Length: 288
Image 1 (cartoon, one colour):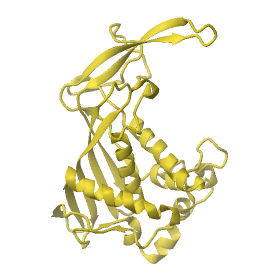
Image 2 (spheres, one colour; image 1 turned 180 degrees about the vertical axis):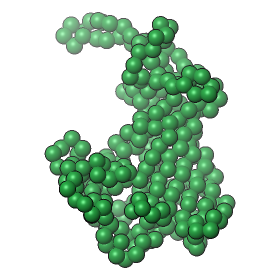
Image 3 (tube, one colour; image 1 turned 60 degrees about the horizontal axis):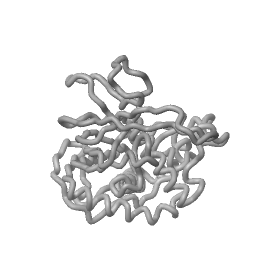
Image 4 (spheres, one colour; image 1 turned 90 degrees about the horizontal axis):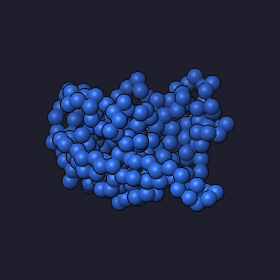
């Protein structure tokens, strides 16, 4: 299905910490003034800045999505550490449509060793100034219950970071799971980074703008999933649904590009789309 482009949804996200946030660096900085556990950094045109890697965000989204899918049906998300995970199950299949059809719902969305995922994340970079502070902790011996080694942590406590995600050639249920994950993050049910059981990792994730692209000729208040675009033959081959649509949506700012149309939605319009997409998940258990 990646050989064609039926639809795409880009979400521009603003992340703001509501409690201390720490995405640990995998290396030690030569700067002796930094704490033992340092926030991951990179070099940009602004100099050295803290940032959140897109891979860290993708891991949070995938983990939550897998839990939701296994709650609906245990086989909707494979165990990547088992001997019969999707990458192993489809490794000898050459038909790309069958690879997609035979993969679990989580792998259809995020990919496996034989299937490219539908969802991609950008790194989250600071939007203006951000503030970090040092938090202190101490390791406790489980044998003596005595303190054995103090340590300090660099946490992000103030500021905003901007990132984006792109969902391409998606089915409507996949958009619903993205909306559900963002809602769980904003409700504090899903946290990011290190120290979640210490009270770290609560963030507000605001969708600043949503941009949908679809083939031309689709009504302005309707969003089509991949199943509504493809032929009946492809639906059977990929295991897609013909009724893969969201209707009754707000009309965004529309621009035509000949063979496809682009619609921009503000944060208020996205809330309406997200509500409809989450509501559509009630039909998820009927899909196979």
